[in-house]
Image (cartoon, rainbow, N blue to C red; front, top):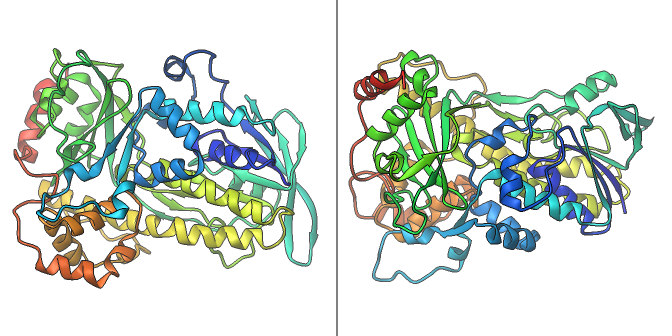
Length: 491
């Protein structure tokens, strides 16, 4: 069995600790934040102070990929989260109705989990900590790497040195530090090669707020027109509501950066005004329907990043050093893939460590191949989708087009084919399944569109107006949105 040090106690770090500890491996998690308080999960999750994980205060979704990973790898965690007020939503309820609407074997995977991230984090934390081989050290960070003597196959790590000076030997060191990917600094300090990253901007600024329904026993204020969400990603901005656990929901508004008017969405009055003019959201922010839980928060929108060394690199990886979750790949938060990809990547990395218990020279290349298969397609899709969204918004608001970033990958599927499939998904249940599998990260676009039968259904589907999940009242024009915000931005 290996001894593993994991730097970071977020989703990826805790999932790896749970997977490895459950198989008898010795795991030490180093987490820079304070420990959570003891007591009921929901109360303690709300009180848990985690300045190193600011994104935990924002809206998250666990899409179908994440639910499938929990069902297969940590069913007790899923059961515990449901017992704490989270809910599973069957997305097939939003599928087009058809005379032959029998369930497909893959439909059981088409579910999402409605839960706030701190609640899921705390359940994962307690499950990992309960394992005899897992130790979690708080207020502790990695200051540097311990190096083993270099051999003919390259460099190797032998553990870490903490900020308190403790030397912790380990067969494997996992960087699960999140978006900052602290291992880059470790490598530079140890004078080891630091591979280049791939990046693509998200080109978005966003604002979010949580609410709690005043009457949990009454009907919802409005319909969830997007299956597990309400609102839409419109022609020049986004306004999306996600229900969570225990009668809590979150609304996130996104717009192009550099617009002074939409920058005012950080004020409660402007945020509420924008919600009121956005399709499907107005009734949810009525003061008789819901109570705000805190202020409007600016949502950090990082670029899409695929870390060098996580995926295939021309240089040999440093043996014994792995990256997990956001430390390996960051995708545009608008698309809601982060938590689910982190869970999938973490559990699959744990499988590789199980296959290579001596942390031999095959582990690094195997981890790079895993990132190429699991993370790279979503990084490339995120870069393309982020750029395409920004260009649509710029065109509708009258802004000049921005140059396509160098290195932006071509989409796996041409835009015209995707548009036809989105339109067909409004009327064809089989096409809807394929599109939903992409949107919930179960299948990549390349996998879905490689099916000749799927493409035939796209070509033969009846034409419907609009796109699935975005029918109904029209969104405000850019001028109407600016007017609503400007009228209330002092609130």
